[in-house]
Length: 348
Image (cartoon, rainbow, N blue to C red):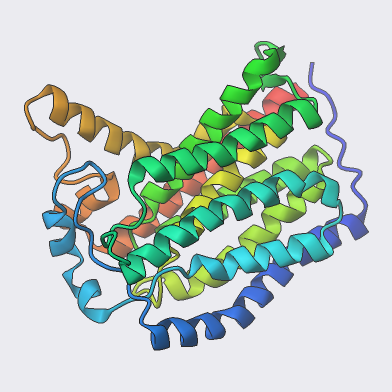
């Protein structure tokens, strides 16, 4: 039986939520010239990779992006939208109690990425790659674990929603490892996807837009406002990051965005929908996993010319802008499908 969806949200509430997105955009625009001046003056150049994501020497990657390395493009620009989202959420959000967890996870992951980016920029005798990958994984996992404990013990959440099958499925303390798995996986998937001008910024804007709608329909106005503040800030960042990019978000941006996206999915009880709404992140991370497995099990043979898959399309001759825009389109389609599944599971 189809139920009538209740859209009785006060106009004033909707205006305030939308205003957070506008504030995020404006504040990011204000911060951008400050960051740009400091980054170019301080020569915060992103250094070329020594190894690809799959562990091999990044020869193909560096050949594909030789022009960018010559241009010296600064990294760590994620600090623009990290500051913007934190300030807008803390100062102006409608329901701060709903946003302590996502904003804490957002800031915690950003701090890890900031350290990684600083090491990448300066070297500091530790190599140009930044923090060791195992250490980064451990630190992001620690942030996710703290969030999972808060989610279970303080927010008293012990169930997940399975649309049209189980309804709310109570899993008790197992919600903690699930929380960690979701957050860490999403953080790394967004980080992997940040490889072409405008790609990660566009895809995360789409995903957070979908979750802003979901949170609004659930009456979680604080979370919806947080998502829209993120979207507004990202649109400003992406304005300057589209080809040819003025700067890159760095790990401070990608880890913060991926971590917050996973937390929002848990808070809205739509974790099952996350692989649909964020399908392109799944494909990006999946292509990397497939490449690693293939090399290990098939004596070094690869499935893709280079992983993740957006670089494979570069290697076979696709223009960077074509890949980015087509991925955006696929991201929009998958987000709409996710919203449809949400509505069907919620109201039918």
